[in-house]
Image 1 (cartoon, rainbow, N blue to C red):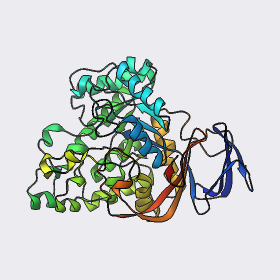
Image 2 (image 1 turned 135 degrees about the horizontal axis):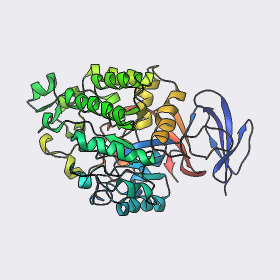
Image 3 (image 1 turned 180 degrees about the horizontal axis):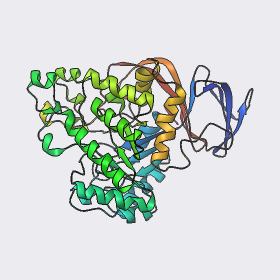
Length: 426
């Protein structure tokens, strides 16, 4: 197997050293190391491979939007070595058979670990529990369950799900959206929605579900994960819950760190997302929550759609935007360049913690001799204009098109094999 040496990179933005990779593992860290292939990492930060807890691969059912292969390519190019594929496919990933299909497609692609997320309820209908135990016992070894795209709104059913997954150390990842408060909603409820005449989505619709669920998780002693948290009030609730020892974790997306609902003034459906982009005060609150650890991780909520689902009037457009290839640059822009977070904290939020929440035991490991060689090399100072045509995803619905973002993934190593070199897929 090729012996790679990453030359002169800054490990977690701190000590500069060479890293030798051989036979799938980090085999040496030091100075003046030599190997078969050298990767110039001078001026770059070296991090553990990124882990995404929230990726929409769309396969099976919407291969026109994304496949496991194309999504894996986008993930690798973005510096990811593991992703969790959400369950809202067609058919829904609510049985052992479907999650095993997704898992095997990921193995065939061979670019990242693809960990299927199982549905909480049959067909995401919110009326009866899916085959949680069978999915956990399957070859895919599912540990994360979510009806993402829909909320498990029935409190009794949510309680039963939280109780059920305790048996195999699973976690319920909730899409926090009270449906009766968001019927027909198109964007954040506030000044901008009033100006545009679009039905508003109140912050309380998210916050009410989170408050209910942290109390349920505490009552049954189970693990709860909150998907794509987006409001200042939600941050406050998570902070309150953690102060009381409740076993809850939460994620924020790059786009909720970057954009406010002011961009919707353009009526460009590229900014239509669920939950919606919020106010400047919300953005500042989620950034602060991510910085102080109240919010545990960054998750992309990568939601690809073909042009026919996006290039239309606002009310008819699909909710969602791509995010795998741009995530690290956005976090660099919003959290590192602003002085809110160090690179060690980025590694914690984008690699270590998501791997721990998803129970992916050989990802998110420290950069030490003997660790699996899942690594990303990132030049944080290169500035590049986002060009959708350069994406390797099957879809092009990036909200950053035409914007200049700081940073570029130079190399990605997955289990010791280079998947990206010189910024391009191998």
